Amino acid sequence: MAATKKAVLGPLVGAVDQGTSSTRFLVFNSKTAELLSHHQVEIKQEFPREGWVEQDPKEILQSVYECIEKTCEKLGQLNIDISNIKEDKTETRRHAAGKQRNWNLNPSSPASEPALY
Image (cartoon, rainbow, N blue to C red; front, side, top):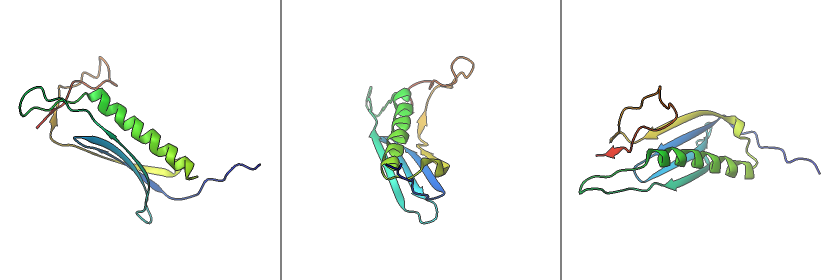
């Protein structure tokens, strides 16, 4: 049996949308703007004091990885070649503050829980 040929679409654009309550990864056909696949993961929120919201930066980062992985799996099931993803756009919240990361200690680790405002 011959291997299934992957559909040649593209170039494709991948977009990460990291928001307050969830992370999403979406893949579009750049020529038609058609949404080809996506995945979304909810993010836990802690409320330590009235008016405060905290989130685990490691969970946020892991949610990005999971969304990308699951979306690519879905594209594979649709026989869409993920190597055609040529561009990535990232959108994130602009209302979060966290401690400064010390790149010399651990460049791949988030610094602290972001304080949302």
